[in-house]
Image 1 (tube, rainbow over the protein chains, first blue to last red):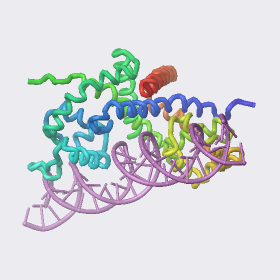
Image 2: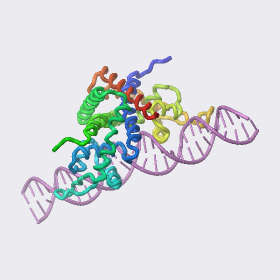
Image 3: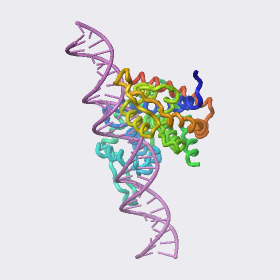
Image 4: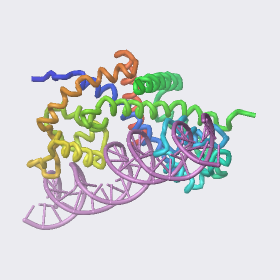
Length: 151
Length: 151
DNA sequence: CACAACTATATTGCGCACAATCGAATAGCG
DNA sequence: CGCTATTCGATTGTGCGCAATATAGTTGTG
């Protein structure tokens, strides 16, 4: 009775599943916090990058910052364009590029979501320092996985 | 020049984006490690739960363990059934339930992936203790978010 | 200038993830 | 027993996430 043949497989569940579940829990929380803006969580992340740059960004640049490819970004950006938050124009200097810029409505939305980070922080129930430490651990983890993947 | 109107929004990117990116990086790594089995990462998680239980589980029970609903699980389980790894049968005692059980092929796959956790651990570049600490932090975070969501 | 190699974005196809809804089956109550 | 409320799962529709591929545009070479 009892005793697994491969105990490391249940340990694996304990290690990786919380990461998976945490992302979905955060995403779910964002749906609630962003209701009213019409933004999804990935759309919100794209808007954050655009608010931060204050310059039009190419799809490739956006993808590098967010680690997303064009298959994800193109339809997402089209939805943001339909919503009137961003504008997509070919770069006259290189017509292969599409430059994504904020519309006035898109810029105006920044103020509307300015309270979201604090609300999320409260929902996560961790201090600022804990959050920063967690961020560093996760960033390091991503870096390791990226180099492991390419080897 | 410079200085954001809402600096908390760039901090937010630093806090939540790594979590989001980490999950995708882990998933991507699993694709590589599981190539050869034909399993996706969510399918692998379902198989882990089934290997651990050694008893048929209802769709609801699987969903509770993995925090997934039937809209995600039903098609996923049908793919596993098509692949010949699991079997789906109505519970004779309550015909609303569908009991998911492993086939011989499904059970046999456990040995095939028994090395995956160690390979992933190496790719993540963290010690066992760090991984356990991270797991605990993430689990706590999920618990907080769950209670915040329902309030 | 012609042409091959390269780059940027778009498209397609598959597999989640989840909200909303539906229908079948069961349980509970009078 | 008959009726209502509940439970379970399947279905539908939307939005990612990404691999593979296609296409348009650019750059480098001779």
